[in-house]
Length: 177
Image (cartoon, rainbow, N blue to C red; front, side, top):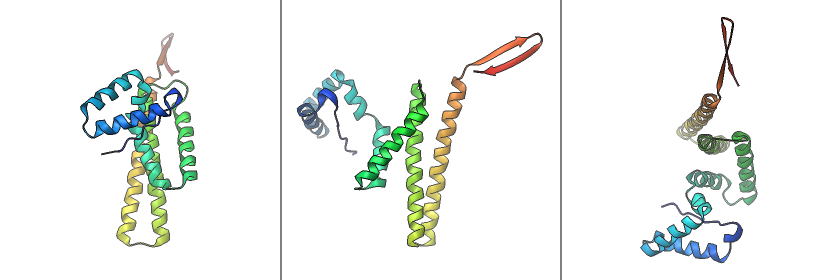
């Protein structure tokens, strides 16, 4: 089971966060009343369930933790890099589908960077041929997933762009805005 850390912001910090964390632990251990109370709290504060249920963010945090280990400076740097990439890729008015695809791109980017770093570390340490082959396959696979996610976002954006058709005399001109 994946442990879900609940980090609340704004007016829900402090005692409310501790109380909700206690309720979640009770619900996870099978307490039906605690689960019902958690549902009520989620209904009252959608930002909480949206955070808890954001599996893309949990996956990204797992990759960041795997890469940065106990180095808080590296973790902060990677989180800021992701935030910057997310902002750049989302643009001004992203659709829900674009948001999903951008999160996928970010997860694939983290996986690709991890595989690249591990392959480089392997080369430096001089492991077996079989291990080298494993890390090369990991790099190739992560890179392929990354490019597929980027290509999919580009295709979706191309489909979302309205095309304009202009007829002048007998010539037809198709223009994408």
